[in-house]
Image (tube, rainbow, N blue to C red; front, side):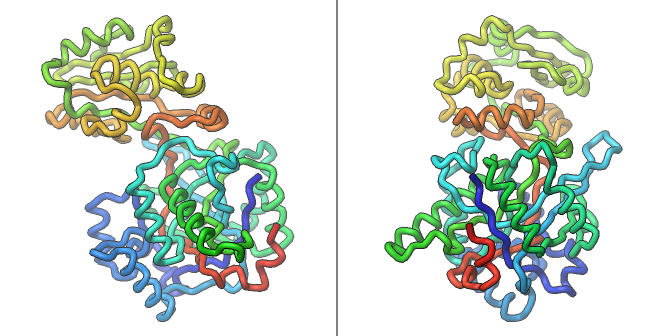
Length: 440
């Protein structure tokens, strides 16, 4: 199953690490334009490596990386280790503080067909190419993707808790309100224990599909170039990943709602309701802010907000579910979002098929519930479909079925941050004598 390796991490020097909040950044696919501009103003912020800009963005990132390494902005740890990464956070409306526990290391970049790392969504080729180009030019990994393994015994958590007694550094509060803490395990016996546990596990890729596929593309190119000299132990065979236990209660998945920006020509809100009626029971409600509570925990239930006091709870008529004839697995067909995409986007709005829906610009994916209502009220959207979150059990069932979910099905919260830990995949990286003890 999954082969993992410790890494000699690159980190901001001890002086800069004391103000680590100034140098971390959101991941490339969630950072807003406004956030980018603010972060770019700091010449040492990690965004210059993870989301570089300019005509030759990847080339500029490579040049900046070399400067930072030469000037001692980034320093490499002397010993390889497993880097423990905890994120403390709260959810809106709750006083409970969660702590998502995990660790960062290198994992072999397995092709999807090997069924060791499992995906749950498709990727966009352009984004994959951008990530592969950046990796090719810098040979540096600037942020960890997020993978999930399942261990009902929670064997590794005690080692991680022990490491957290002596953290390397922590943020006060990142852009999403979480407190991020980093520690390291450099005890060889414990690292071997981590390797043995993961060697018996599959890994579900929770977040970072484009970055992972970028690593796959780069590894394939390097392997072809290596020819008969290929050994399988080259550093570029590996990928930086943050691994968390899927059995933990602190693993949170937030819903992503669907905002219909435009209706097909000639279709009014009233006609849309009429088209929905054969498939859904419609219950009129008074307050749109009641929608999340009214659909919570109910299969194939959705909220619908059309503005001007038009608030509805929708629930699929069970007898019509058999009409869902997309060529996918029963596990995918059972999902709320598959039902929404088939019966609403295809049957009601006429956007036929998953591929056409992926390309359709008339829908936006919005995580913030109040924002959905506000945008409808402002006339920026015609309708908001409010959804329940996907469960971890559903993610696992879909992945093991070999299929993928509809786009934007999951939002694992909180996201990891860039700039907390960097790793190198240069040829000389695995020549270090410390690595020999950890090779499988």
